[in-house]
Length: 555
Image 1 (cartoon, rainbow, N blue to C red):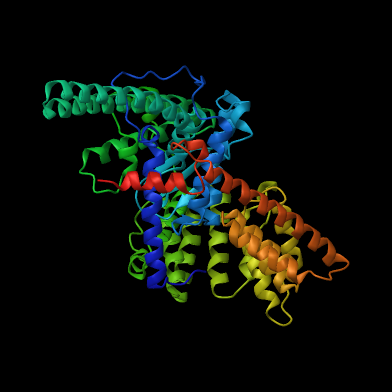
Image 2: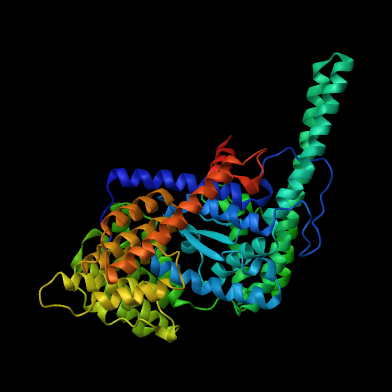
């Protein structure tokens, strides 16, 4: 269980949130991902699925997205909370499956894009799409939504930005507009030289800039309407209630009427217009009257987001309040969940036990989503107990609910096994079995940094230094830090000299992975050296997000 953060770590997280905000602002507003001079002419979107010849290729867009994600994963604002990420994935995967069935995800992008969501430790209401199939979700958005359907409606919209290649299409449009805009300014300069009046040039340049900005804005609005339309079809095809989309639009509409204090960056990158509102309400009018369905599990995840995005003891103290028992069942569940987690972070044992008891009583009083809600409550209890060094809660968790391995349970059981091994005679859970389960998980999900880090701890506890170093290297590589990964593999190489038997197999794997990582680093360095003219496909490591971040932060 995480302890209170040090002031230095809090400052690092705050700086990380500012950097990720900049990347989100630069990449979510697909029409502003690049900042060349736009054109005065009105731009029309190509037909659905049509890809212009000058667009960013699928492979280049994927590599561009990977470059951005290497920066994102190393940022303190990047959050890997297994429980909340598993819940987000439970909403995201049905949407991706529905998009495949509809044909929105074609064979060209289906196997190349990542189709991955991630969490951003930020209390503002935002979500954004990145190149290559990555979608980021701020904790503030999860905390705002009142049902899984509301959250899924935003994910469907962002997914449609990816499936319709809006980022690549925006780049192609910006490239075409840039040439025309430059020509307009050159004409202004020629006119000034002939008249001898500098004001003429300034007027021509200002006029061309105003016209082109309107052209890009119209292009972005077309994209937003298309993402609304395609997203609704995906959302409906995945089995979510249309009332959730109607409720989400109402919330955003209400927020847009208020003075923007910076809490709703989503409204700046996805501005609501009269047309968008009218079309969305027409699509969901038949379901809006039904209201939102009660969603106990979502209330628990909202509560978790509220605790995770509150970085200080004062905020956690407020969340431990259990008053207001006359509220609805879902509200009582959410309040008890937040109180238990916040109290555990404060180290208040009796208070967290009281909240866990209140959570169990509130769940007994309700029936909606009972099996999954009970599972989430059991995971919370195991998490709280693990923070105290007690493993019985984790030992009772089911690893494969519904036949599918649960990542948070997998990691918690491994943590419990390590705690038990440190106690003479305990051994309730086997570290060796935990490591084998993690290895089976990683066989299909090689990019899971947290799982690799846990494998490293298990291997170290079992006395296998070579496996531990290799797993540490894989964890660093998954986070985009190839330099650290290579250093650890070289340390493993030195430790493996004279290896025999089983160690010889480990040494061979280490040699092969070291060659892979070194080759990947050479390719990235070559890509960075080959960058020219600001072309997005050739940007080096981190160049695109840092440049975009500066543009987003500029006044």
